[in-house]
Image 1 (cartoon, rainbow, N blue to C red):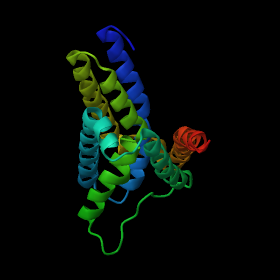
Image 2: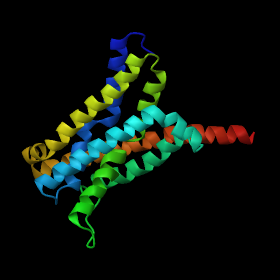
Image 3: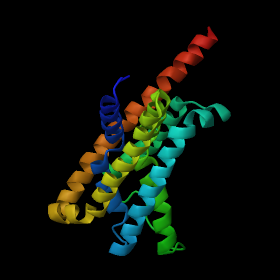
Amino acid sequence: MPSTLPDFMLLAFTSLFTMVNPLGTIPVYTSLTGNLSSAEAKKVAYKAVITATLTLFLFAFAGKFIFNFFAISVNSLKVVGGIIFFMAGFDMLQARLIRTKQDNETTKQFASDIAITPLAIPIICGPGAMTVSIVLYSEAVHWEQKLVVFGTIVVIMLITLIFLLSGRKIISFVGENGNKVLMRIMGLIVMVIAVEFLFSGLKPILQDIFLTGK
């Protein structure tokens, strides 16, 4: 673990930024909010980012306690997150909406729903981001480093919000066909990440089962 504060800041930012991947959230966000007005889409972006921020705060501060209390592991979170990620990536690969509005559902209910799932969790705040926040906070020795963890979360979430709010302009610039191509590419990447999460979570679980069986 880096001994100096600047090194810890760099580690925290690069590792969490990679896991959150703000740029990769754009195709998902624009596809989910395609039938919403500009004002409604902005509300979705704000609610998703706030939800993801609070979730990362919670896992950073109390992640270990939550896992110990419910007797669950980070590996289980990776498996579940990997499955959800794979389903989302599969829909993106076909360039279709991950979640569509139901007939008996109001626009406000639909916007509120997609802001939390799948946009905030697990697209923005996925198993990787949760795990990194837990590890960083647990490895933070001094209070300055603990503040760096929370500060890094805020900065990356603000960057994500900027990307989301600019998403429609970016997509309109590349055009509808470009949007579909970008969505398919990101869908493939999301599915690959999902497989990595799934097997990185399954491997230690299976090893534990077989070793215990012996």
